[in-house]
Length: 165
Image (tube, rainbow, N blue to C red; front, top):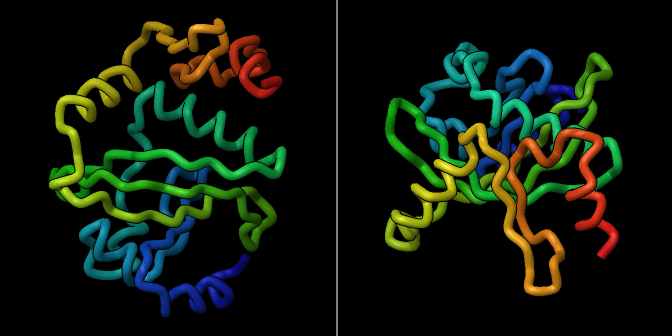
């Protein structure tokens, strides 16, 4: 994908952006994404510093890259803080090759309305995503249902068992 191809996404009302996983920056974004991120223009959004992400976020994105390399899509909720204001977004993420041949993350994001957010659950999820402890949720049958980002780091028997279901 190059920037010219990406311009066709400018017509969408849904926020779509490409995040460069290696350089940790937004490579491109449509106008709806600029609004979601609270940016006045693409240049301003590209200059934002995403280099200080937590170890848990780095691990989470490394796991995404493995999913993309296997041809899979990842769908999760993320909390972003443009200008310090929390925004909860349901993200559908796919790997996409950008013009220099590297794999980046194409994100289609839909903001979750504030009235639909369970604040207590959101705080708990965010706390779990950034803890250094390994926390997992299992079904009554002993099958893993959810795991911390650290569980995505290969080799992970937990994720292997989950995919075998």
